Length: 169
Ligand code: FES
Image (cartoon, rainbow, N blue to C red; front, top):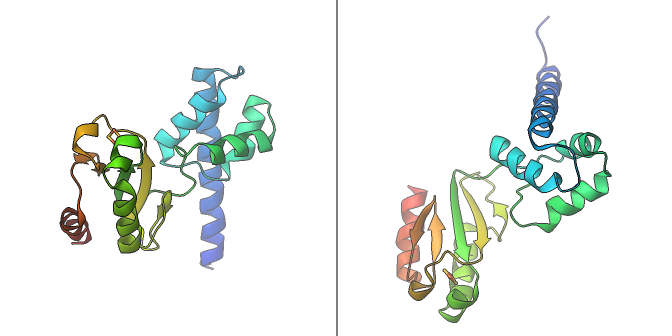
């Protein structure tokens, strides 16, 4: 008898949970389990998996002997932590003061309209993730963004159309 899709899904979930548990154990071995280990552990897990899966929360809590609420609170408080896999393209808009003074809010509205996602979200087709950053060190040439790791400066609606059009292709 062949395995059903549900059987395979359950098996995949178990494998993923084992993978999370093993990685958390290894990282706690490297980082330690003292007070203050939570943030470096979360960063390391996001580096390893690309996001903090909700299923990691109880494993992290147990490994650091803290409550699930503590872990959840930190994951949801810091914008750095993603709770879903990132899209294939990552657009990061600078929201810091100089870029705001140069029209970043209007650019952000255009981007969210075009991509159909808000800051911190990934499009339903998995193509884009939109994030905020707070200064890229390019303040004189704002409004600025990073697109797939490359800085883009002096963004205006025409630049944006070209940029997003390139990513959609
Ligand atoms: S404020 Fe946007 S790059 Fe510095």
